[in-house]
Length: 193
Length: 80
Image (cartoon, rainbow over all chains, first blue to last red; front, top):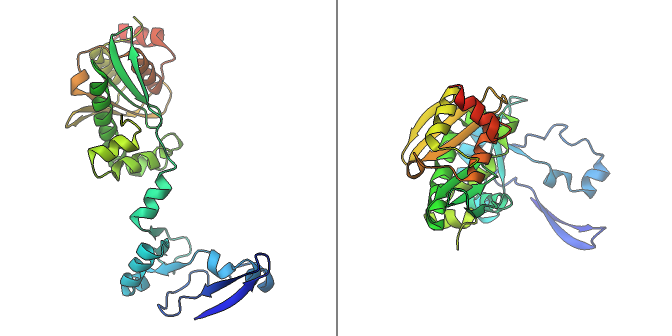
């Protein structure tokens, strides 16, 4: 079901579309929006407040959900809608995830150490270091070390995600994990020439 | 020279009770350091094993472990 409405502030037409055609269950259907009907209308309450699709609905409509995520860049929330405090998952396209992760950038320090007569790389965001006789070796070692620490992070993820001192590293390690080639990893770590 | 060799760093990590994890291109020390009560993880590459740690690298890694400076690290190492 869809309708055309005129936004008073922006003086332009906006199409409001409800997903009745797919029949997704809305987690916030009963009393989810506390605003008055007027305010709700004004601020597009129904469209802006997140809806949770039940797992059964997700299975039933997986093709539509995938299409929404892929082609409309929607981020769909799913979980057990019957349980009030149940954990949920987000379904999004890889492009959207990549865009979100781009804000977690790396600022590596590459320098020559006079005291030990070697090059070193320090990536403070994830606590990675690497040394080598030549610049390229130090970069190569730092990349390998970043991969080793990323592997360790995801091996211990259930602990690390709960702790303040380690959870901030999650998006950085996820960015590394999502790289599909050595060249991409070099770019992501800002270590490409 | 205010730095150490990777073998000495390994010795300190072991003494702090960190867990040794063998990896394809080296090893990782991971766990909670008793010095600062923080979870730490440090990667040591095969290429660097036995060699000197560069000064910036050394300072970065010992601070993760909870040492304030080189002297504190050296005192700890000398007692092992």
